[in-house]
View 1 (cartoon, rainbow, N blue to C red):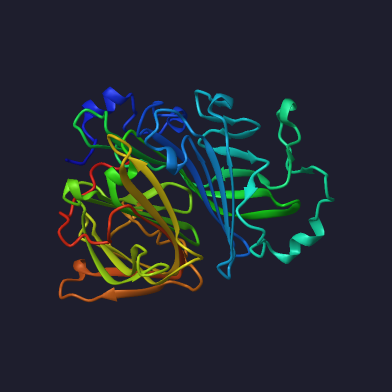
View 2 (cartoon, helix red, strand yellow):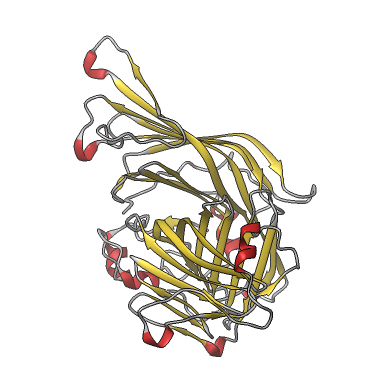
Length: 446
């Protein structure tokens, strides 16, 4: 089985995509209602107190990927700074769900995700807690404790029909406002059958956004703010048949946002690999992405196993080196990673007779991310990755060094940033092993 990132002009024309611009309609539902077809809209956020927030609206829960019918679900996960995890979900009847056109317009019964590429509003109520542990909620929430039996009102909008959203028990009312332009690698679709019938799509409508609003856990309301990333994934092939693993990192530096996505195909593709990196500048404009002229090399410096010995291995250290077309380099290192909370193992049945077992291990990692950008000293204006007139930093002022050569015109400046990083690692194969994977260069990236 092959795996191809669709990037030909014929692909754009067949799919109705603009090669130079992501449009609002791309956020709407893209998958059919069919066996092995699925779709998910996710938000991953780091709140100002260090809590990690993950929200997913999905057309199917993992146990029903092989079903021809939708099995919609909403998932909320909070991971506290100490690793304590709160998880709440709600399954929705398929006949009570609607999918609008024009932008993102999900109606999951009385829960919604609505908006466009500039702003989103996410609401949910009556979620069911997996346990009674609420230690991941800050003690400061006590002042907002709702009385037993009362609704918690969270947020207001200009929509007269939805001016007040009442959260029963556990839920959220959140708003996202984008801080960067959408990211889409080529068409955003990986084809597994040369006809786009067996495919997986990936799009980040909001690679960087401000998030604010209210989260309610078992009647306790908490106002939250922070930084978020919104992604949209869909497919007509089960994830375990499409991928061996996916590593996603989003890290913010002062004035710059890095998004790294490393997608490796299933063993039947020969572990074909697409490492992709995006750097967005302080104005929200894409300053760099890997292209046909970019080569990437990666080195895994260590692995560990989440949970017991039967868990999936994940990288504890990995370094990516991207060679830029102007003879520079971008090196990103994720090091000293540790799992946050327990790995979430999602298992479901699929295959021709529903007998083939697959699993997805999802691991949240925390560690240190280091970004080193080397550019010729003559790089200026639109061709410069680092804005030389602006101080870009994370926790500390970036370390800048100048390499000396005999020819002054060959001098290069290396700017290094370092700070805390959070990554998500999903593995559907048996192990994290890409030693035999061909190193594929990512093609045209919007």
